[in-house]
Image (cartoon, one colour):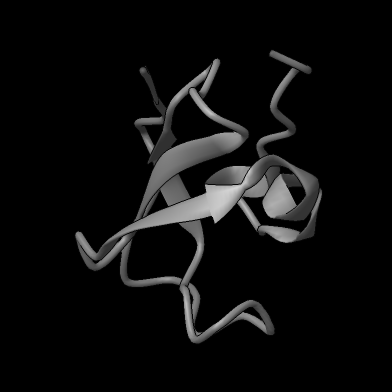
Length: 66
């Protein structure tokens, strides 16, 4: 699990991906072609690996391929 800290969760808003806000935590390596993610509101979601690159992350974080 990767948790990105040191950012202001009040900065940001909805993204284009299924109403998710910026992602603050995610599975570095998922299972079964999916990864668990959590946005800055604490909303959990499981996304397909092929959609992972469509997510926006807090603080302009760029995840490394897992």
